[in-house]
Image (cartoon, rainbow, N blue to C red; front, side, top):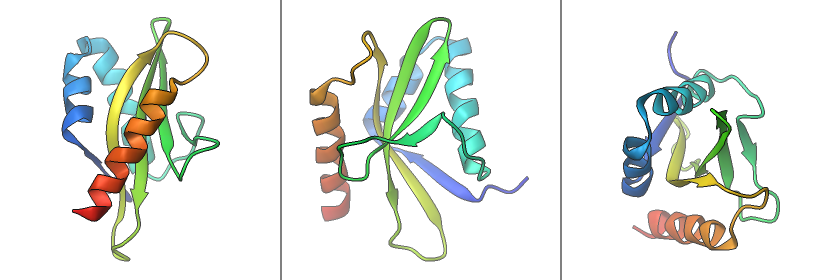
Length: 112
């Protein structure tokens, strides 16, 4: 099946993915592949109270893995999602510092 959406990883997102155990990495990548095929679900949702940030959400082995992302809609011929970084959540609430980091990386991306 051809991908409808391209997902690119910024350096920190790639480093986070590489730091995960192999089984966890596969589960996180599986959720991203579902999004790339145009499927919708609870694994990729908009974060409330942000400037159009989204989260790839994965629950695996009682760990809540989050990868922050945003859409780049500048090219009408391609649907593109950019992942900024990730974390393993220890509480229900997403740390404000990580939201701010994702917003900063988004601004840097669009200003480059």
